[in-house]
Image 1 (cartoon, rainbow, N blue to C red):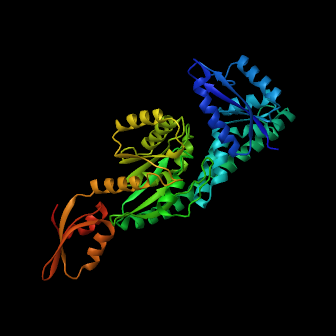
Image 2: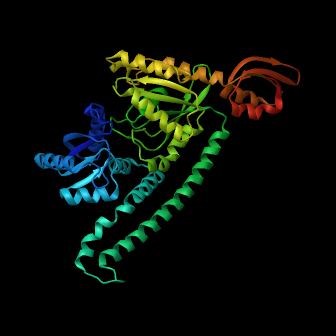
Image 3: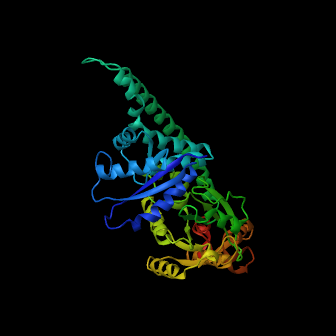
Length: 422
């Protein structure tokens, strides 16, 4: 039987607990992903945080009473606790007390599949736990009275641990720099191949991996769980008009994503920064769809990908029961210069043709028409145009041939010496 947890959400509006109910639902999914069972939950209205326990003493007493009634093994706060608040809660309750930040770190640790992802998670965990080391050795300090100028065993052990953690942080950062250099080289080589790229982004569990697999036939991990994959997966998609595009699945976004994880997972989010366009996947059947859209847009702005052309893909449309929310989100997004929006189902295949058409449309709009005169022996350049763009007209001369085509920017750069018009 799994350990049980009391979940505590903080309603900072101070009006009612209704706004915190969706937060508790998501927190329950998060703790389930680390093997905890939500035995119960509470919403605490809070106008001003308390430095000691985050909440006031009266609310803290209510939380403790409920934890005892439920015989919970731990208390999980949806808000982030400071190191001192976490220590105070554990002393007061005698239970393990964790926050949303630590739960997400634990999930990421379980999901990391590559060396780089594992190191990124380790770095975030080391940075999170460094200020919390004092909890481990306070009992040793209390066993020795000590005098001025001397330190107890606990203080010595704490200093040794701090040095060990700081050394490990330095080593992990160094190794990540080396891996980042290798990834940059691979990315540069990939961009030398003049094929346009798109990135699938969206809230965790929106169905990005399912959509990538359905579109490309890729062997991609698909699971109904939060942060099912942390490592970017790139697959090639051949479009009906003859164009090709590479699509990359990225890590799922989440509300209150810890800032150090935004930095730590820059490698997967970097695919969104470098992409020519984004496919923003939304779970059309989720009542919190608008909030999830806003969360993802906010993180995209943070990482510098907010200006990319966007196709909105309302996924799981076959499960939709209420179209009113969908119409409202459509209206909100239309005002934010979204290039196209489609309703799809990765499960049933509904709307996939429209999504592919939207991809072709966004590529065509970014590829102005141009004419090139190519030497008669440069059939490799003609093949490049065929492979990466759309040929509108082709005329042959004695020692050359003229091609009118639409090609992506990377191909245009290669063909620049042969440009006649456009």
